[in-house]
Length: 111
Length: 110
Image 1 (cartoon, rainbow over the protein chains, first blue to last red):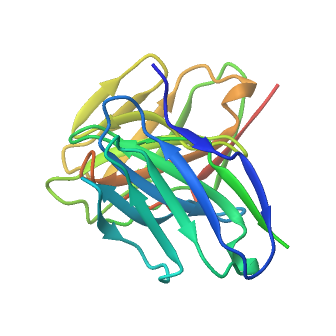
Image 2 (image 1 turned 120 degrees about the horizontal axis):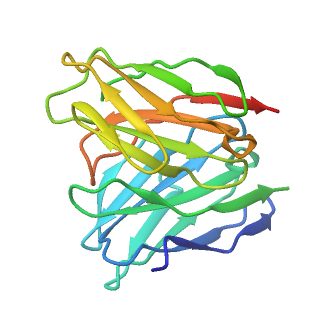
């Protein structure tokens, strides 16, 4: 049973560019959440998708957007990249009454 | 969202039992207590979740007193590979947003 998978594993971009990160949830899970983890910090909640709609959102600017597809997979898009967007981006999937399971993330570096 | 407080770091030796305590004074009635383990450059790994009393699985035990204002993660006979950051979180299971603190950095030495 595959867990949460994320792609790509590493990505290098320059300031001002845009990026799309992808996530496939664990089998049987219908909700996807995205987190940003800066070096030395705990993950910070970006947003959560359920039934193809953004259900909850953390304190992140509109440059961060997402999408969930009918098969429950999800994308995270970040526009106008800033140096401060360099981080590990984590996807977690869940279903009601079960704990969230995380992928190993995408390491995004902004030059 | 209930805030949690846990030690910044702990040291242990191989073969010892490690207990990491987490304080969550404002835990809500519907909140569960969940612990995750994270290695560098990997996503957090679910360890254990509980609501009250004691929960045990193949890797850890979770002790929750009656007032639920704290919890203790117990790792029996740790090994070097248990060196990691451990996060304590409280919230409704499943769909709740997870609020991570800085976690506890556990260092296991030979």
